[in-house]
Length: 287
Ligand code: SAM
Image 1: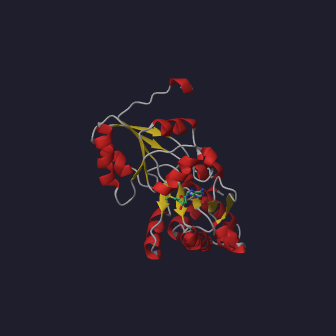
Image 2: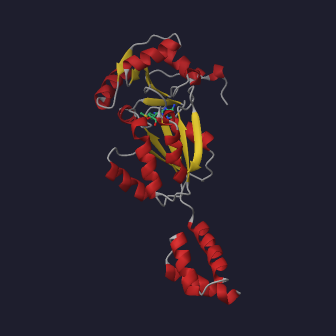
Image 3: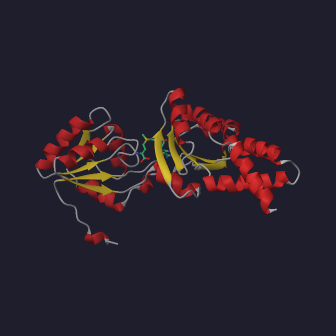
């Protein structure tokens, strides 16, 4: 670990800085120092960043760099980097380039041969994952799903068999629709974590089976307000499915003929009946 006195802040460099997602106390000491020594701060919305910097007693030249002007903004930043300046890049909240502008600027700046230094800070995705307690081995960052229902359904169907925890960003006006679509497409027993207003006064992190998520959201309208991250437990592995099917089959085989037991198990697990019938014959042999 480098001590605070052994930091390097080269000039002619773009510093990509993560900023708080709701709690001003979550800015890092390094981020504050760099914001203080940079020549200018490129930001999504100058009013939002002016307010944020004001909280820390900073007043800097701001350069607008949003979704619709990233490449042009990059040209301006590159011209300033050529003069040897240090430039900070921030988004409204959280980590730039994560469902936020930033990637195109970093791409252009790197292509122009300049140094880019990341200054890590909060991100809603990682914050939710750290406290959600889902134990899948990996996660898949989805960000915002398409706004149109049909497109959203298509994306989610493709993700249904992913073993990774899915990380989805959602706005309050779509939270119910999205959770409903998730409950329609995924197994109702899968755990969902609804993480809202993270790091803020009304922070709430609720875990439940998908089948119970809509009743929970509807029980209190306040639960549909604010900013949301949804975490959806990954698909059960094939091995887990097979061992569960084997267990169900063996219980049913005590009472029923192989064909009926295989048929019922197919309905419960979704595994093909032929495959289960073979499994039933194997189980009968080893009895
Ligand atoms: N770049 C940001 C990051 O690193 O997390 C994300 C920016 S994206 C435009 C904004 C979305 O992130 C929100 O709609 C919400 O889904 C999620 N988000 C941001 N802050 C949040 C918070 N405090 N609690 C829950 N979700 C949050």
